[in-house]
Amino acid sequence: MSTTATNSLLLVGRVLLSGMFILSGFQKFGDPAGTAGMITGAGIPAATLLTYLVAVFEVAGGFAILTGFQTRIAAILLALFSAFTALVFHSGTIAIPGFPDAANGLLTMFNQLSMMKNLTIAGGFLALAAVGAGAFSIDARRGSVAIAA
Image 1 (tube, one colour):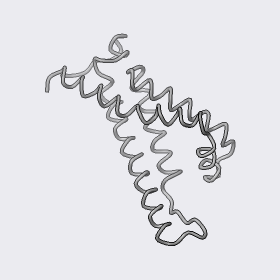
Image 2 (cartoon, helix red, strand yellow):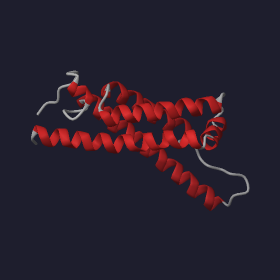
Image 3 (cartoon, rainbow, N blue to C red):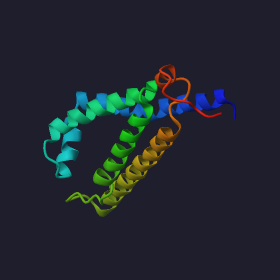
Image 4 (cartoon, rainbow, N blue to C red):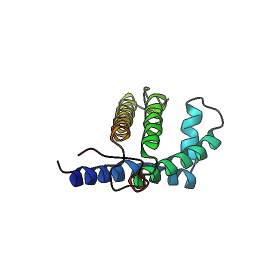
């Protein structure tokens, strides 16, 4: 594969990986209650404060990946964040009192899919951390990254 093709794929990968974090972070600023509820439900204190800190982290990390700024550091941090959220918020069984077993089973399946999605995203970020942002990035303009052909 040519260097241009590799760098183009890295750019597309960065756009795709960053989008959900940027959008999710902005959503948390607009409606923090849902995220704060999940944090409280996991038994973690200071849920509202953490919601806003996570929102800042997601937006900043997403833009770092999108623009290719400090990509390796941002990718490792977002990989850890994705793995953490997978294990803490999406690894359990859903058992809402009063819900039919089939509904709880369906919610548990969706929760498991979210866990696998987050772990898969963590893998994508680790791959990005390994190769860097590529030529179409702030890192490349600053001379802090080189991509092999």
